[in-house]
Image 1 (spheres, rainbow, N blue to C red):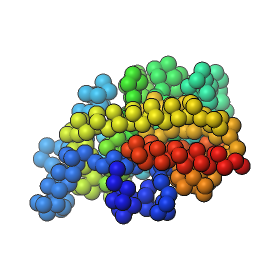
Image 2: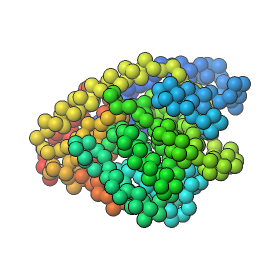
Image 3: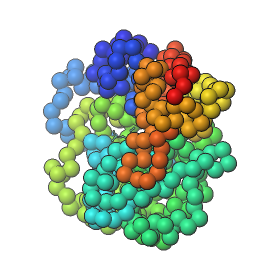
Image 4: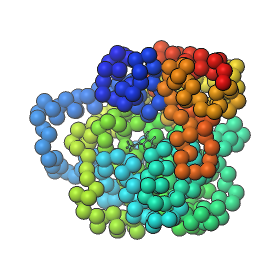
Length: 386
Ligand SMILES: Cc1ncc(COP(=O)(O)O)c(C=O)c1O
């Protein structure tokens, strides 16, 4: 990792960090991009091919998405039901508008990726938390009485982020089955954000929610993109597959100009990532596994009482500082004293009564030198006391 290059670049992860601070916060990786992405983007620029695009054989992003879901996840997306978007959050915003009414409840596992919480609240809907709790040494959620609780809260939409950010859980068939049953009983639309699917660590296997059953398929909007697993968040391109007839009817009637579309660079980068970057991705996963091992060992041996349940997917980890002297606001203290930037836990429960103040999220997609510096910074901050 060339930290000088990263600091001099235009990315927010290193750009927001002071020159003596190591950033381990936002979900961008320090690990470069696949060569095929670089080459396909350079091809377009060399050919000065930046006009309005035309595809003789249909939209290549959709074709690549459908192929990938079939080949890697054993799921056959319904032909003609995919739309290319600028990003996942845009797809979520559209789904909220089309599937719910102001005042409705939107269920979501909490802690949650903060823009999800903000999207629900700013649309005038109510965040209904499904709290993640530790069950037998793993992050999970209480399933007893879940349907009754969501019914009482007026839920019409379930926002399911799987694999889950920030805990890194890959929900298993039993958990997804419970959620599918609740969705059926309450007639919920499901927005399944599966952006981290390619980042599941073996033996954990990602199961697309829409592949669970015909009923699940018929009520789900699945959203994904190549941006997290291939480190191209700045190019902006995502796909939404609309399995729900009711949502599709409304979605298809919206003018294209209202929804907007990603540019040719984002599209080319996405296809190059999904179709031509498997070797790069396998090497990436080996690096992330090695980092996860270092992180897990560090946390397990930590003298301060901090806790980490190692993630089953993603390069994000959710650290509990409740037992440490810096529980009142760990990310702030770690920045100030340790010169390391994490995401503040409190942001992941905004607009809900759930309290995640004692947590921080750490991004471990970097090299071993930076990771060692990040962990040493946290050590210094914790050792400094309250
Ligand atoms: C669960 C989840 N969904 C969506 C996003 C962002 O995706 P996009 O940039 O396509 O909106 C992220 C980014 O970290 C994420 O973790």
